[in-house]
Length: 210
Ligand code: B4P
Image (cartoon, rainbow, N blue to C red; front, side, top):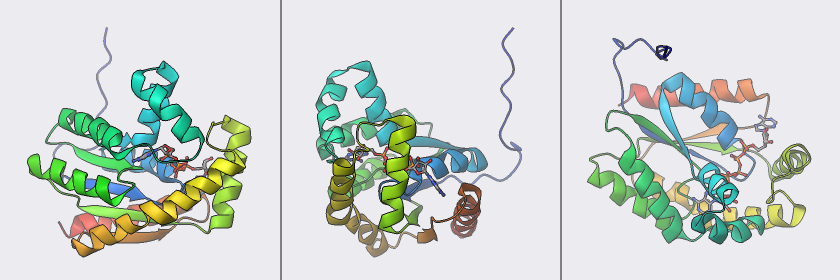
């Protein structure tokens, strides 16, 4: 017998459909917080980092191309990432809220996303940007290296990822600010639950305005 799916929320509750981004430097807790946001707000979580790691694990053509780039701490080419996201977004239900984690990471990716969403009649509704001092980010990633052994958590790759973040990813926030998208900067330091309380409040504030 197939067990009935347990709904996350009251289906009679008014539903606000959202496209949200969780944004921040490497190790700021995007993936950690996204898992909680996904449950709390009934959103589909789409993490480009997770998709790429799964492609690497399966040894696919995309994975073979991405593995060396990721291990060096560099960003995977925009065209490759845009194709992955476009195909995943095309498969999402138009009545689904979506949380993008780790994408867009360049202004080019942000522009490509705007076009993809416009074709679906949607737009980015909010950005939650996690703010964590760099020293703490490095400590977290070096700790994760011991626990999970991720190929891109070496000290050298971490430094390259920080460099890429400042040079190519941080400007994405201005892209959204200029477009009038609400950007909530949230302090990402503290216990995971404590950070989540701030993230949840920020999303509720934004959703309340839509
Ligand atoms: P991602 O998978 O996005 O990884 P990340 O930035 O390292 O981590 P995240 O911020 O999600 O941190 P996490 O919650 O895990 O990207 C990996 C790589 O994929 C990129 O470097 C790039 O090569 C490639 N890539 C992905 N997307 C791309 C794109 N769009 N374009 C091009 N290339 C792309 O947290 C980190 C650690 O901190 C964990 O160990 C966690 O347990 C801990 N932590 C979290 N919150 C904490 C808290 N509050 N206190 C203490 N520790 C905490």
